[in-house]
Image (cartoon, rainbow, N blue to C red; front, side, top):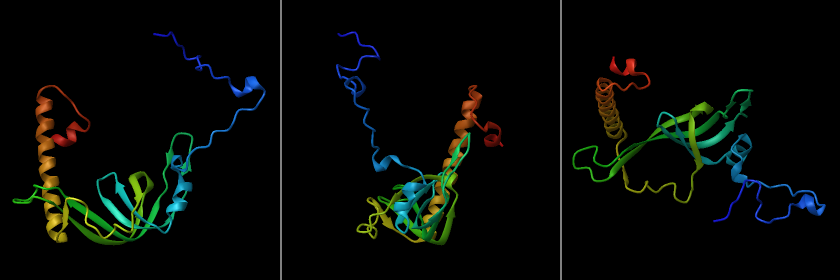
Length: 180
């Protein structure tokens, strides 16, 4: 095995040694995740996943540039038009349910605060009308009721898990709030 160090460059002669200035590296367009990239997405249909788990589908109409301070960068706020909130219920949530269910709820114009954006992406308009794989369109009230029940069950399960861990001496974040 060779003895290599960080200073080893694999036998490549740097351009400075040949008397030429170093070539500037060009970054691909995907590397820009700031407001400049949102310019290309303006007036296009997007899916936006929020930190609280909601998924929004809408047309990006406006956005503001992020604010860069010494301590942190605040992402851009988004304005979505013709927004729909898509709610998913995984398979097996309801009795005899072999496939997942989803429903779209009209929300109209939606202002999304930038710090709540987890992920966003452009929607392929050729496949926009197709249901998500493994899911069937269902009544919005049914899907909302199932989603609320699922959240309640998860919260109850999380509370009991946190209580059990507390009895074993483990402490989690916001332990006092969970036990109350």
